[in-house]
Image (tube, rainbow, N blue to C red; front, top):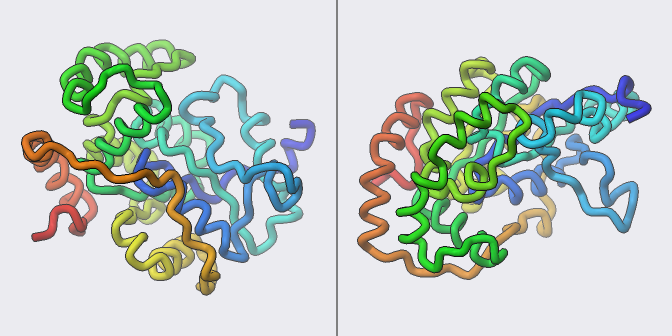
Length: 272
């Protein structure tokens, strides 16, 4: 923090979505020779792990700008290179877009989205693996969601220091309602500063996806090493009850249509 004045903020923010592939995309981008890691990082401190997300604009905004900039390399080391952070709660947090638009208006905004049904189920299973979800079935968690989230967003907005576990971690259905969350970000960042990827397309062709991101960030294309693409936070698949899948498909249909109209493109999970 003592050298924060010498440390510019992020060139890009990877804002989500949670369980959407943001971790895999971030660490794949770090293989590009012009993308620098945050500090501390494993390149400088062999026993350290690369930091992906600072969670400043959602959970740590009260720590201030100097604390935030302390995670980024000094300007003297950044010639011709870029650095960014990936905090997947940014997309859903009701204040993150406004804060980022005010503090880092020149940052490029990256977003990787996954089939919202698969994302929701994966999110629930992650909480169960972490012993952080007491409800034994996905269906029970979906039924409890509205009650758990009741009033939480309003409290976050009215009490900016308030941290809501339910809002961040038990919003299984709500976090896949992508369009209104993205539209909030697009009120603070122009469309040319926003790029949205589909997780399914990234995993199918990581090189093409990273070339697209490199062009968006103003970098030269670079071949990925064979070891670059790793699926982070993967877990064994489980079957989703057909009735639950159908119910979620009906729930998400208008949100998917709104997302495609907003971006002028289709997504793998909506195509025949």
